[in-house]
Image (cartoon, rainbow over all chains, first blue to last red; front, top):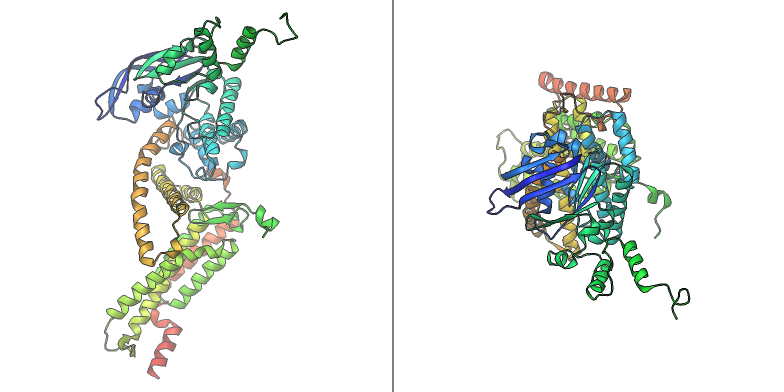
Length: 290
Length: 298
């Protein structure tokens, strides 16, 4: 079953002349990890906001088409039902904080969906261990570091155990170490849960190895949607659309164009390394070289 | 100088207007009891004109804060406020006194002063100070969540606590934003201590523009965040059940809370009844006033 099915989706914000996204058709299989990539201001956040239901519930504008999550039209679902089905982590973690302590922030969504106190405690322990925020419960979410803020933001949504977890540029405000920590959490979520994860991300190099499906959004349309192995076959087109493929992939693409490499391009460094090793042959003294 | 090991270990908890050690004995009291201190200190002074009692209340508040291990040096930030209020009140009282012919008068720096009018201002000032310090003690020692827990303990309808919680959160964020802006200014070399009082007042007025801009933008963000997390104004969950209240269960209402609340209620009602029915705590009963007037007559 598909977690999300989008048919002919178009959305124009109130007061704007053009559609932010138009003619979007996309199916997201349940349990998959999907990366949404593309340049800024081309419709990525609008697309995921439509999947979450924030659009059209909280915005004025013109809607076309249909978005279904697990077979239910998002426009017909209540805020609570949508919160249970789909979690949303905003790009700016401070934009989603509604409480003045981390503990309250984590419990807030769980209170809203009416979980028992015992269940809330269990989920807080689970999510704190998963995201490494055990020592922060009593602090204000505004006082902690940028990386900790983002982990709290993810944890507070993850605790609700939504069937679909959407993260809108979760690493955009973080330093390299903070980014690594978030990708490590994403990897854990992929391994330990059966959630469908949709990540809007600019860091293609780190998100691609996690992805089952990569979606390129350009000028409000889906320019490409494919598994990573196929997604990177035409690096030129990706670069034209503002995407920077991984360095190793770019290097192999260059070799391929020069006629020195005839294999398939991959987004995983390990695959690229193997391809390169095969191309170079065994090191001197170990192989059959003269 | 190296920090003392026990001081280094001291974990602090940020409150609405300050910081308090996590180990403060104050936290043994239920938030409802603490909110009651705000109500008691805010209202009881309305029935008391005798400045000696209001001065004693202010001292009591300072002792309470000391017991709660609040750093009293932090209260210095309220000094300009207390001085400004005094200047304003006494200036008005001296410039526009109640010229009752029965009042005692005396000359000071070429101005005729009316003793009873001046003393009434003095009494009013300390009444105001008792209320002000009562408010400062509450907001210096409590967080937004404790206020909400206290209000929810009174079984106030969810819609009311909903708006109040948003207002408190907004106030907390407003203060955080202000702190950020001030830090950014200091980082760019602004030394507030070198500014005159007038320039400082101007500086605070200038803060309002970015603060209100941020607040307006945040309205949208909070609205979306609340929707995304399934918040509804009814306080009901899907299917009609009641929303859970996890934070509320973190506080225990003990016997000592009941005793303290009862004592405060009895004192408040007693003060109100004594004032309304017996005319007690009127400014005329102030021993200091008697001494002041006797000294002038003599």
